[in-house]
Length: 179
Image (tube, rainbow, N blue to C red; front, side, top):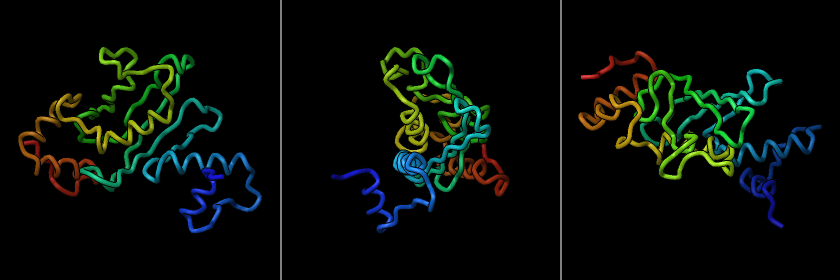
């Protein structure tokens, strides 16, 4: 029988990754987390007593934002899963779908959506993690931006847009070029 543990064991070259004395539940969480994030996302809990409030670090492995590390704050409301979690980007970023204040344009986080792609009770936190990760790859949307300046900058001058992304990603290593 093929199990998630055996799949990961095969990918790791036969190592189980279980520390001596680790419980089965800890091992299961580790397997789930590794499959969910594929190495580009990592969740952390600033307060271990508040499991409804956590942070997610996204480190894209391709595209404009490759090698960056972007922190998101996720608050799961009491009414979850009837309403979506509240998500905010904590990292200053030059992105068409994320404002400099951390607001995020991701359809599955919309409570009410005309096109039917918004939040539904069948959606999970896994969908949110995948959605946030995808904002840096296949869901990068310059046609329906929240940060209009970033989208227009990309359309006007792609080279300078990439320089601006790098400047935001790595700090003041180069001068911002919003010309």
